[in-house]
Length: 386
Image (cartoon, rainbow, N blue to C red; front, top):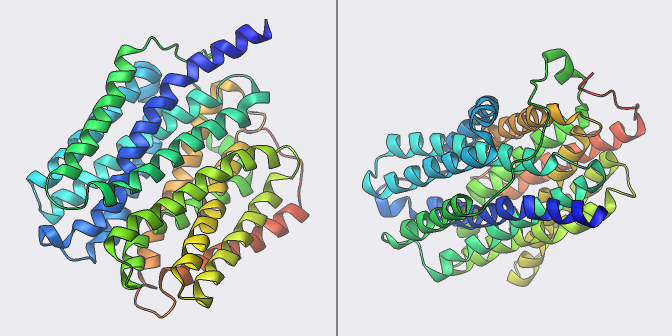
């Protein structure tokens, strides 16, 4: 009987995870592509931080409104709808190289991407609690692994002409076809219930802070790290590889996180990963060696990409399945608040000697101190659904 349930679970998650991986390759390529091609379309590099914040503002809006879409269309159809919208926002860019249009397109893209995150996260979090950490690990590995591969598009396909956009839209198209063609079983749930403000206030504060900080650092890394590397006189052909190392570090750490969740308190675990991030940032300041930089960026990826899965696991602990979609929305909203602010705040550091690394050092060190204090003052978590 257990084997039957396991096979059903694997069949249920295979299709969304495969579609997610293709989506991640496409968006990973796009995220690093945009800052590097602004000048090609007559736009200044100053626009990079605003495009990143516009995207994350859309992510924030999407986190609020996506629950109703899932309730009406179901997970599969909602997933397809979000991917179609995302593809349209990509097609618009080379056809209309205007700052206002690109800002609006990135905002809409953020809404669509928020939809994908909430849909897939709630899809995988619904079900047996004992294997939730494993399913979340698979989700993160597919997301970060795909994003890491996407970074290599800068080296293989380049940043000029229509080829990058055609490649990105094609990948999204294949993901849509997989969802259309495969016979997927939507997660069985007793219905989606929105959390009240009182219930949201009962959610674990460290989990929400973890989501916000994850957004603060990852929003800045995605939006400004390519420019940071360019300012360090790294060749454009190498930037994609270094960005891939950041995300590859994030992918490698996922099974480690899954194992550590069983042995270490989650608040303390977030503190430890933040300290790893502080160490990684420190490494980038002690040597100009590209080998040291490569190692430091991979380590930074491990530290920063570990925060969100730990936080979301903590936030969904002991929640009733009917509250999972709403809870993932709240945490994605928290992540989005950080993501909107991150690139704008980090941009203030870009002209200083420390650059983006100075911003990341401060954010990660402050978070590690908070999480260490929170772990010392740990109280039994009240169920948010009560």
